[in-house]
Length: 283
Image (cartoon, rainbow, N blue to C red; front, side, top):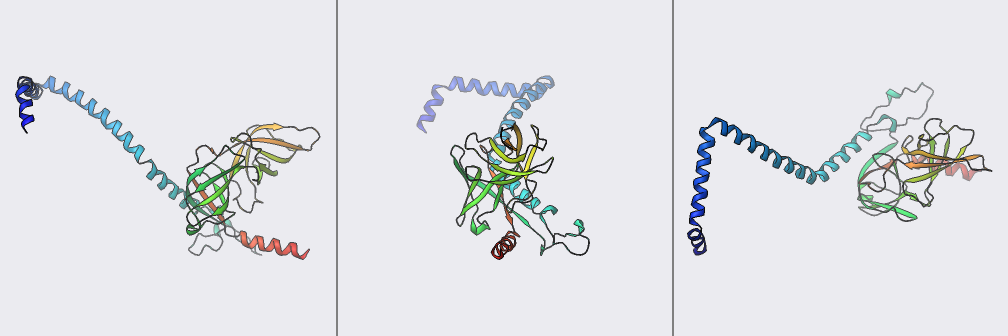
């Protein structure tokens, strides 16, 4: 307290001058319309600038919550897609609109589970992604993993609350794919070089392929829903002595910035696997 009084005593004249200046300005702005309007304009501009910067910072701090909300909404909407339901054929004519999304969901084939990415690698020959969702949240091995823009990979290992995903940027990754425009089916794999590109093989040279064509997951995949984007043709390699093209694809997913994904469960996969296994044993 003593220091405060000493400060006021030392700078009394300057403090008194500031107080008088403030009172004078208040009287000027309050009783003079022109100066009041000018003051209000400057004050509004300054406070508006501060408010804009504050809102920018506030929005940035809320991005995490916003992303989580968007991921949850995306999961809910994906699980309402009619194309993820597959009813068995019968003698009667199948009408797609008759497949109802009811509480029992008899015909559901694909179920989407959103997950946050907490680990990612792109600089190795064997790249993996770690997600914060595990067996306790319904994730199992061999489930497909998609980003908001395209294919990411396949679940290969699961703990209680986390899971490891073998991304398509892995030398052992193989995905059944097809050309969107013509429907021909091939295999997509990675050559271990550039994380932005993968290779599609086994496309006959009789097929017309051009740069920019879209490549999607095929209907023969037992993990991925058909029609999911894998990439876009960047280069068509016409290899001599071969009857097939080697297509260089730019990946639809940006693996340098994967933050949220959807784990996809094929609810009819077990039945299909059992049938195919039993068929092979009979041969």
